[in-house]
Image 1 (cartoon, rainbow, N blue to C red):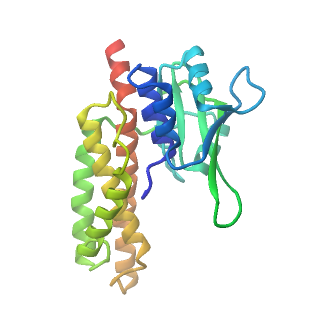
Image 2 (tube, rainbow, N blue to C red):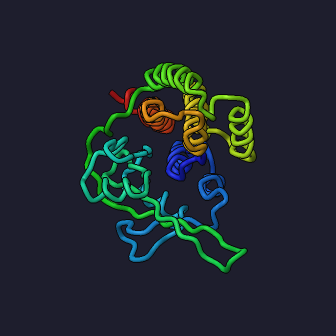
Length: 262
């Protein structure tokens, strides 16, 4: 969770483009980020992969009015609605984009290319049919914000009690450095998102960074099996809560639009 998911960038800036708030060039530039190129494969009517600009325009013509994020993990199909083939591919990639308004989904396949020392990243989004049903386990922004605050407080208490690396000043410095890198040259969310979504996403990313740091530092000072088990138990629900909050933030524009249409 140290890096912004590619599905988040595609959904956020794709939603801004669909709403007419950014130009196609600006949207594609933000979605691609530091990757070399993104293409979409399997679009109806296209026999070969196409660029993002054409793909987003084609999806709009097919009826897509919004894009949602899914960040599934084993045993937790967060943001997915089926069918099994799409869910399996999304679970393998640990992320996906699900279209609203037309039954399509996009799963990224990340490939590295180029000689040693000059490796670049290419992303192919595979377009697949999805089931039109409510996404699994996605909270509202308000629910996500409350859950994040509670989970962070509880986990910090446990980790501090176990003297686990990831809750002290070194972790704070690492998190601040991560946020500085992540925020250079980009907005937290694309135009059109409410301030609360930005706030929830920032907190979710910070919580995710804390979990990653704690998990990357071995067992810290947790020397007994019971302490190790307590640490794992503390981190698992926090990581799950952070992923749910990220999805809620990215999907908030579509959810608000849907409520307004009811």
